[in-house]
Image (cartoon, rainbow, N blue to C red):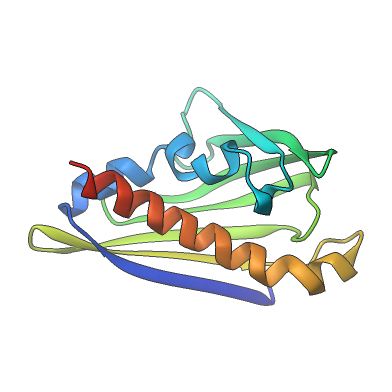
Length: 159
């Protein structure tokens, strides 16, 4: 996948606790479940299979609207090594506006009572409307990465 974004942050919680938080697809995708300007006023609903999005081969599906356009994606967990690494990527036919297929990687590095959390995305431009991807894909990918980090920061700061 040719395009990439990543960021990292120190989280005020032990590694195993942080991994349990990020291993929950609903928590990690919460930025897409709320209506926002980056979501074009729409939102996505998360559903998981019997694996709960927490084991290799488990599916995570998101469905909703962005700018009034129906969106859908299916992700599969390809690597799951608690409490340190989780990787998932889109599979099959997806309907997204500004990015195409992608792979997300989350790593947790324990640092005493804290953890270093890194979130990365490797992504393609959308196969249709590639011009939208060139204009907005990078900003959207960066927003997703930072929202995931901020969600973890906020969760553990309020404890």
